[in-house]
Image 1 (cartoon, rainbow, N blue to C red):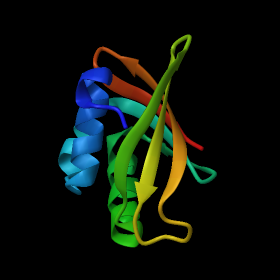
Image 2: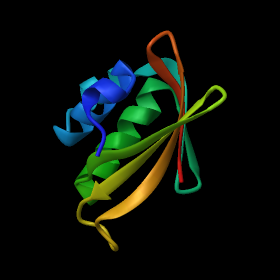
Image 3: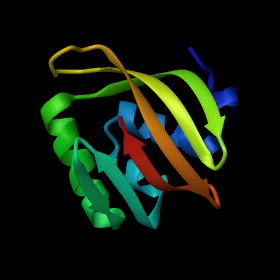
Length: 110
């Protein structure tokens, strides 16, 4: 398991917000025009990202534990152990982030 000091600060805030189900803080980790790709769907901007997070929290009650960090050019790949009320829980997932100015500008889960 990774500790907070091994992660970019915005990813530490992203994980803390998710694990507290704090949607407002979660959305603050993203740039206003960020894009999220998850389960075949795209979510554009703060409003859609907030709706996606709220719906996912209501359905899955997801908790995240960072396991491994890799950097591939401009992309940060964070392997996360996700647990919650979904089939297969807990399971590892790779989160592919792009960050600019301490904000997430894109996230692809998969």
